[in-house]
Image: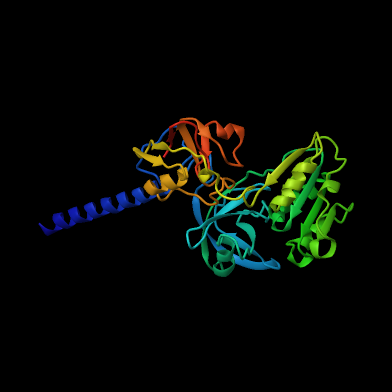
Length: 362
């Protein structure tokens, strides 16, 4: 009698183990499971967004300029990326911050990011500098690219400080292809400007690179750099808000301007500005409806019910909190989404509802 009973126990235990493993794999594929799926959701782990979380090992940490640390993150099976892409770092505290990839796309075994220490910032850069050391693991999401290098007859780059990180892979690609390009690179001092030596070597042929250190020559002449551009020239700008405002104001007709922001153009979160009306949000897949007060963001209201919904900047420029809208008219207040994306999605950290009700795919 003991043998059949033992066989039954083994079989039941094995089935339970297999069930637990299958459940873990299912949850890993969709953090909102077992909520019912809707057609083409962009929330959770969607094919439309590179949101899968993976752990990478920090195998290199280098100070590439005063106050700027570069990290090399290695791991197997990394998704490919193109110049202009960024990575979401999930920091040990739980903060999520975006950092542009500044390595080589052909280096398929690692991602490289760099961040400047901002002493009076929101804490992300300080955590990177103080806690992320070689030998530790860090969670990442992405990569994603909202600042892609487009085809154009010529290129002009206007960059300030750490804004060089998304541009550096572009310069390498253009230099290798023989394309026409120029760079205006400004910073507080030459010692504070990351990757300066490599950039000057890339532009050594034809005086393509103009370096303006503020402690030597003041602010860069953005209007002069953009004067008399040929029609069709693509202008890429990344850096402090005044630099991007100057590039926007000086852009010649017939040229295209591509901006990459590391902070919002205006202070504060648009979702809580005066005059915002209260409304309600239905979370269709969870079967809940939450009220959004006049001075409250959709993100805050939703996270009270679904605390694991991702977010980062809370100012409408990073895209982490993008969610699909199933019903309702959206009052878009972000600085990121394309017109196509605005048709059926919103950034819930800042955007609101025109009317009394929105339905989200959550």
